[in-house]
Length: 234
Ligand SMILES: *Cc1c(COP(=O)(O)O)cnc(C)c1O
Image (cartoon, rainbow, N blue to C red; front, side, top):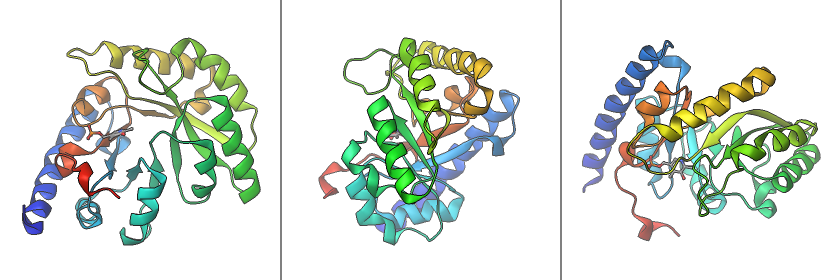
């Protein structure tokens, strides 16, 4: 596809998704602006990412440290970036002071390293704890039963702020995992309301359903930018 056509497709996709997000927000008793619409940029040409920003995208999600580093200069200045991918402890240092929110904290050792590096940089890093709500072996995330203990330990760090939870549910034809995650989020919020402000849940296939189950941050890639072409990633 020609670049002009691709840009038009992003504009059309943005308009459609934004209106579906707004509709789901209202249906769930909230306002459209209560839901953050993140553009997930992996494999996407920075020109198209900028097109989405021109449409109204106000938050980017990056999966890989290296890919983000190679593309960041090409993004519109000032756009906030979240890190949503699997994160190795030895890469944490590259994110400090650059990333609004790290969504993928799934183990104590990673939280510990973020705390250590944040202290070194004189910042407090906002994070989400990632939950493996489907209990899949192949996926990262803490088991729901281990969340309370992890939260207790991470709460003790002075350079890490827990802002909520993130999940990537298994593909599923019904809402059971979204409902389970909503339940876990609300239960955790009862004991720690200040720490449970963000529920990062919902991707291209389920963002509207996720919002109906309490998500206030949806991470959308292929529905916005089209199918990913991994051959182009260096
Ligand atoms: C790739 C990715 C997304 C977006 O996936 P789509 O199905 O293309 O919307 C969302 N969250 C995470 C963590 C991802 O890695």
